[in-house]
Length: 102
Picture 1: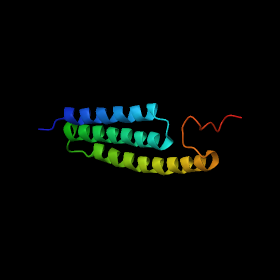
Picture 2: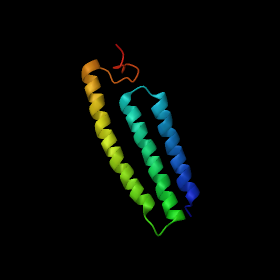
Picture 3: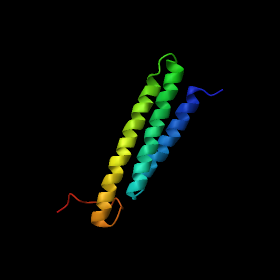
Picture 4: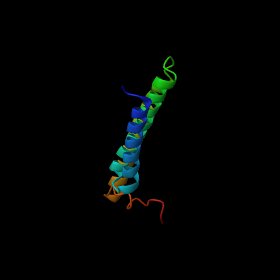
């Protein structure tokens, strides 16, 4: 029997993997993918809570759909920014992206 603990454990593991990828990696595309993994982890937690706490309402599923829409928009904008930076700097290394410096 799958319980809420299983959903939360999966969500915590995915969030930890995404957090590690976002903080430890230097490649900008991998950082974006890690942020997407963290958003999926939050969606899983919301759907798990919705299923076990208030199963009659679909609030968790609706929030998960909103998270997917935001994640798609974030991925599109993020990849566009990374492509523009790559054209300007010829690198997608996060340590090389210092456009605000003089």
